[in-house]
Image (cartoon, rainbow, N blue to C red; front, top):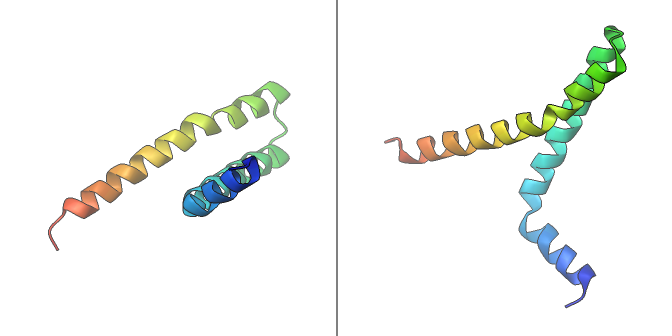
Length: 76
């Protein structure tokens, strides 16, 4: 199986996850850029806020999984 075939298979298998990851990244970068277009802060703070997107993403995914598990175990 070639690399291209593997990438296609991965994209088809994880389509929803890839879209959610991309949307989170776009929203995070958009919010940080909007904040720093209004507040002319230092460059290091901009990069630090961009970097905090990584733990924010994992916190978001973790809380989303917990919410789905709780919803699955709640009685109707």
